[in-house]
Each structure stands twice: as C-alpha cells, then as structure tokens.
Image (cartoon, rainbow, N blue to C red; front, side):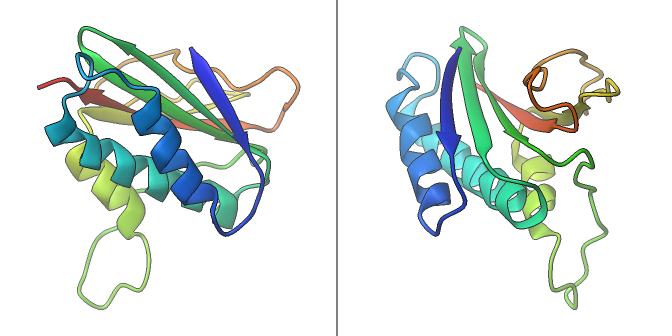
Length: 142
C-alpha cells in the first residue's frame, strides 16, 4: 500500500490527483478509467479538507480487480449521501462517488461502517488518530 500525506493548502486536491495516476499501473487501471479515479480522489480529498481535520492521508492499493483509494482525516464523522436536486448547493461530491465508484464506504476508528457493496474492514484509520475516519472507494479495472 502506498501513502501520501497532504496538508491543507489550495493545491492538495491537484497533488492527490497526480499522485494517484502516478502510482497506479496501467494494468490495474486503464487510461480510459483514470479520469474517474482522478475525479473521485479530488472530490474526497477536498471534502476531507473542507469538513475534516488535516493532515489528510491518501492510501492506494491495486490488484487485478482494480484500485482501492482511501482518504483518512482527523474528524470522526463521515460524509452522507444527500438527495440531489437542481437547487442543492452542495453534496455533489459524494453523489459522484456513489455513481461512479464500483463500491465506496466509510470506516471510522470506533466503528466498522460497511461499504456500499457489503464489504468490511478496509482501510483502517491510522492508530495515532483516534477520532479518524477513512472514506474509501474501489474502482474496477473494467
């Protein structure tokens, strides 16, 4: 598993996008699907910086099935999928993750909230951040 720690600054989401693409071999995520990984990573990093506590740790692992990206911050409460209306002024980031990821979920340090596909346990927050949560998404190779 590869990790990158980001502080709260204007270029953090852009740095995260580039890092995910640089650390994901083509055989695990074809170029045609990289834009999805970039978009979802950017949305979740920005959410973590806007609503959580820095620093933010970005994790990436990959296998024959695709990639798994986790964003950990120092805030215990996780994001919620909000109903989308044309009048809504926010809440689109998690809606994008829900629509485009193969699966996604939130894992808190005090609970094991399951992902949208019923999966459990990945990734776990850092031991040194007791109030931390990790929002993760899986993106299949195909």
